[in-house]
Length: 220
Length: 206
Image 1: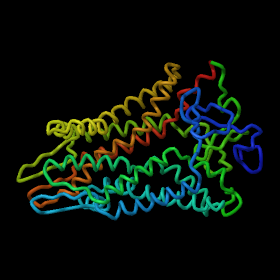
Image 2: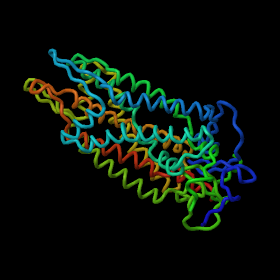
Image 3: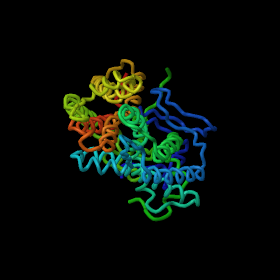
């Protein structure tokens, strides 16, 4: 192995001075304890390196579970209904995915399914799973794989964009049809507020909070 | 400005997944002792990959704009809209605010991404020391705004699903929207492949 941490159990604290690296320019800093509301910015490039994590693991779990529940509702209930001459039609997210699939828009169907259903769902399930075990001070089975996986799929969850898309569609369709917003839309609105709360949360803190090495997967 | 040490000068390496800082003792491939991913000083083939994906994104962007993205039909009137004509229609029909939102997401953001990423790639390759902090900021901007371009794809998908009233009115997706979706995916991949540390890489030799 070409890399050595300075102690057997790795972790930033095992250097005599804890270190922090800017991901955007590789500048090395000494890591200092942060107070509530502190944000560490790189002096060289200005990127945010670290934020104080003010929400406890318990709060995060509660938020993640709420978000998961709201996500299920957002997907079960119809989002909008259009009406014309007494005819009414409404759709859920899955309705959109299936309709696109049958209208020669398979690529669009897959894009929608992945960015609005699969990745957000896996993301929320993963958070509930990891945080649920972390609350008990334990390491979730598959901890490493979940942490790595969630890191990669995070940029590909697009629920916020979808909500803006629904708003634009409503106004566009309003020119020709009677449009009414359905419960699914409001569930989505709540969901993106919850997801916005997670925006400043760095799940990497779990590496330091959870005794991850003690069981299940030992590093090769 | 006093000298800020960089990881390579101190023999350190940073795990891009879990954030762990490790000592880099010998060259060659190594994995992160904490999360197990391969550690690299720089993203793999960042320059080439980023260019390739950006060019691919741009190539998809041409049919995305030339081909219509959505067909609206009502009472025998068939109307095929491209991205731009959709924006114009919104503007004319009295929702200039929405027209601006859609214009920003579908035209301004992708075009900005093409220009900014290309400029960042060229300047990084030439080790330019021009406006480094501003270039770093531009990169972060591109990274944040990238996925909002998906807006038009979602709008077309939603409207096409909803408006199915038989022969009286119909909204159907057309191939342009597929190319547009691919553009967004390619440019997102291009910006994640770009390594912002390239912007600063020549500074230490100065």
